[in-house]
Length: 160
Image 1 (tube, rainbow, N blue to C red):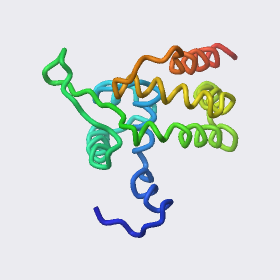
Image 2 (cartoon, rainbow, N blue to C red):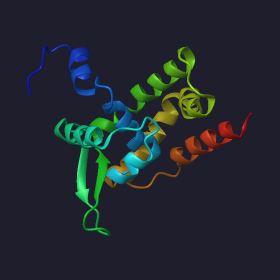
Image 3 (cartoon, helix red, strand yellow):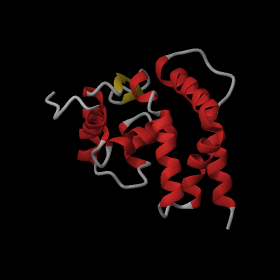
C-alpha cells in the first residue's frame, strides 16, 4: 500500500483516520459485537451496509481485524481484533476521555470513557488481557472490564 510518508502520525492517520474505522473498532472492542449483523444492528451512528463491509475489509487488510467462519452458522463470519488493534486500548481511552471532556458527548455514552480514564493504565491493561482472551484465545483473566464498563454505562443511563 502506498503511504504518503514514513511519519508515524501520518501512517496512523492513513490507517485509522477515515470517518468509520475507529467507530467499527470501538464497536468490536467495547460493544463486543463480533458479526456483521451485530455491528450493523448496534451502530449508534447508523453505518450504511456498504460502508461497514468496506471498513471491515480495510481493517482486515491493515491487520487490525481477522475473520473466521462461525462454527454455529454457515453464513456468518466472526470478526476478531488482532494484537495490533488491542494495542489501541490506551489510544481509545484517551480519545474517549478527550471527547467527553471537550465535546458535547452524552453522559451515558461518556460513562465508559470516564471509567477508563479514571482507571488509567492498570484498567487498560486488564481490558487488553480480556480482549486477548476474547479475540486471541489467551487465558481468561480474573476481571471482566467489559462488565465493569457496561455497569458504568447502565448506571449513567439511570441518572436523570
